[in-house]
Length: 282
Image (cartoon, rainbow, N blue to C red; front, side, top):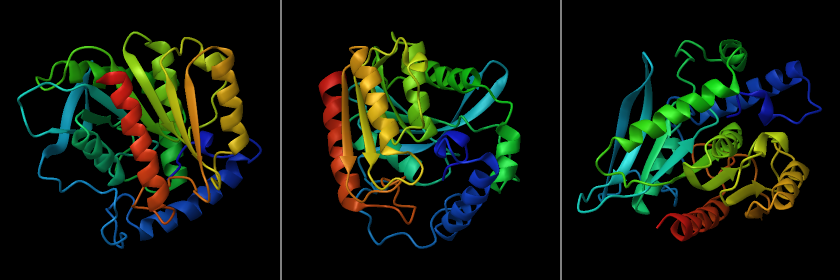
């Protein structure tokens, strides 16, 4: 579900976007985007929440005097410490594929953590218009400060190995993963945006960590041309970048909670993701 303007093409007006998002929102409710899926695919191959070798659940952490919720997953074994990977969602973290992404990172041997950067949105805000109204005055720096507080919280946890982390994000969360790595280059060693919102050259100044981008060719929200332009920006800056395109894959193809889930592409993208993390973090 896209709830922010950077999920829409640049030439789409705000009114048209909100109307289109309302349709998307209604379709996602059929699949339980916020209330868990009512009709999930049977045994989606990327779902690992029931893996007996991991532990996962909701947590809370502080940013100043504010308490923010999040979702944490880690390997069950406490024999060794593990690198952390931040998961930055493009919407509220109640959609099951976000906890599942944290769990999949734990299966791969990491501590996966999704800070709820949309914690200011009350449960009563249900429509895209209501959500947009709550978020309209929120700045990028505030989102990044939430992520930083989440990373600081991770460093206090016994299972987390010290050193640089990875960061992974979806849609506007993929964009913010890059912005965060650019702002805090000493903190992040690997960046993995899935169909990231449009990101310009100025915003990526300071981004030195290797980047691996995943993009569906049939994405109706993020034009392939935007991703190719981003690839050129990063290459011109000598930032290591890999870009993978997936045939017939739409926006959110990794999310088995959505009608756009594409299992083959999701499995391949996740294999590439874990190999990328293995190379850079282990």
